[in-house]
Image 1 (cartoon, rainbow, N blue to C red):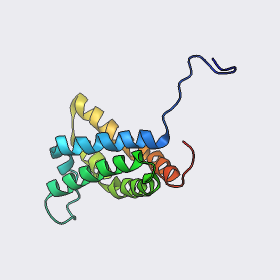
Image 2: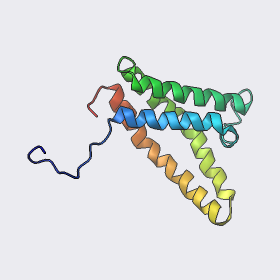
Image 3: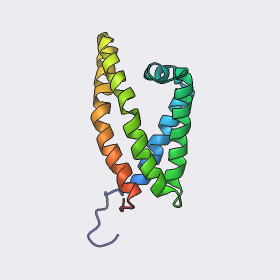
Length: 136
């Protein structure tokens, strides 16, 4: 053990790795269970909601791959920040729609969708740090 090192301390994964995992999981969720995502596609967007859900899932997978590769990490960081800002209105809609769900499951859904909105702020900040090449 290195002097001064806590034996129980764990290293946090690099910011880019955590973001890649998040985007990868989200992309897979969009493609495996699209119906829930279809429901939050803003009506103002042209075309069928499923096309937007599929495109969003593919974009998230591409962002995950871009964050994993050192050569594309900075560009993927900028793109990830822009993506998170772009999908914020859909997440807001999801939170508004959750108000209509009742019971215990509805309460959980309302809490999770409401918590998701402010949590995007640190995600955008993390993506911007990756884009700027700041150390993890």
